[in-house]
Length: 163
Image 1 (cartoon, helix red, strand yellow):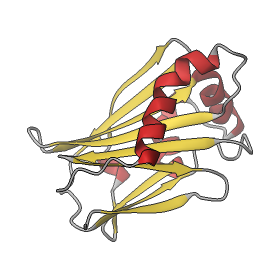
Image 2 (image 1 turned 180 degrees about the horizontal axis):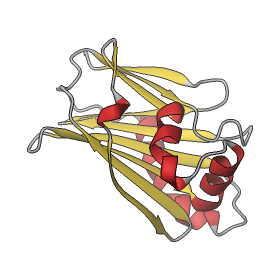
Image 3 (image 1 turned 135 degrees about the vertical axis):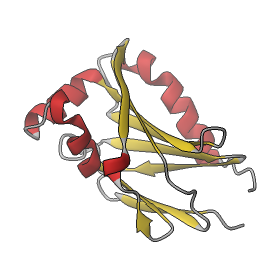
């Protein structure tokens, strides 16, 4: 795999790092970040969603969801395809939900063979709540890393693993 870090990925990483600080300034941005990382030692994937806690609670309320059916809600918001096959969310194992500062972190693990040619992501987190919502997605598999930015006009994007 080739190492791929473009300007979009670097910008996304800076914005993710700024999330706690930006929130303290009257919440000027509506932003979430999701990372999908392959852990070869355990042959599993980590899927982590970081979202402002107040936005997260409001989204659950509006969608009639709760922390008890959190996985069902996430499965509707973030859909991932490895090559042409959807990742089966029934294999998601909720590892933790924690609130840190003004953000909520939701972490899942799952097992699935790595994709060989592409990963397609559909990300609709909070898009029904805010017209200016941005959802950042960072994909890491070995030395390969790529970032995507989703919004109301772009809810489905593909990362090519071929160079």
